[in-house]
Image (cartoon, rainbow, N blue to C red; front, side, top):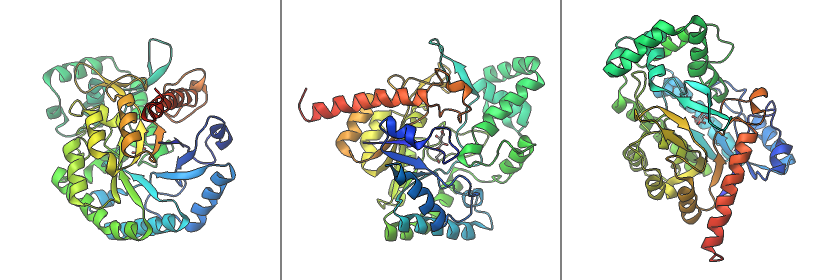
Length: 393
Ligand code: DNO
């Protein structure tokens, strides 16, 4: 696989020269300054592409070209937004950037409750705690009927937390769940919004009456509309699994399991309709046998995220694990992808915060030393597997 790295553009404190030094071959990035729904112009694409190439690197993957909410809930403006999306794809294709990652998660992209969960070795990692999330849902968001989605035991824990949490704790939780994890992925809420919870409630309201079936239909409508452009410019669309792969906040999620992925690939059976194999997201769902999914979908995978998680005994809380441990089984995954689809771009996803990363203000999960360490581990795994394949071992 080709070693790529998620880079957040010229403002990223991790520079392209640094990445060149650590053996990165391709860049994963987006036009982060363009608001969701607006057209990515050829001029802006070419300027960033040229900048990357001047550093001896390639723009390998777009992550992400965001899908506006109105496309997901089928709002009145969806056709106009789809036209804009097609125009951006056409421009990307004409500039030679041909792998595009996106997701179809309503309202909220990836979810974590703790962005600096201490690990025994002194590093920190990202964490999702189901009870803390239930507290956010029931006591901060105060979503109608939220209690019905949690067990008795979880609601007991919520009551206990409610008696202990301070206003400051609540603010921190709001930041973790709907601000800090969202803004930098071109999500709905950024650090400059002063009433994130109000905005968030309004967004949830837009999905009243949208169940899994409807969301699937809206996805099909979108993907069928863009496939002709993808065929014409040879663009590989790759959907990112839901993170975590389960229903949350009463919102439907449609990329949570092998059955979901199978449905998508069969429903629009076009090689340009493919998958971002995010091992970490998939591993956080106990329903998923991650290597089995890799084996099943390697040929329709256009982009790989390597990361792993450890799921707690409650079955839904999880911590991001070392890249060589946890449920994802990255050694086996690497072996599958090296055999089935060796030219795939792969990026190390997330990484521990370590050795001073915490003081640099990086986006949550996107440390430098932590990711570099993980890249070194995976490079070693790749080398061993390749040597074995060439029968040198
Ligand atoms: C977080 C990521 C997601 C992902 C997007 C893809 O670190 O896993 O933000 O990049 O959802 O569209």
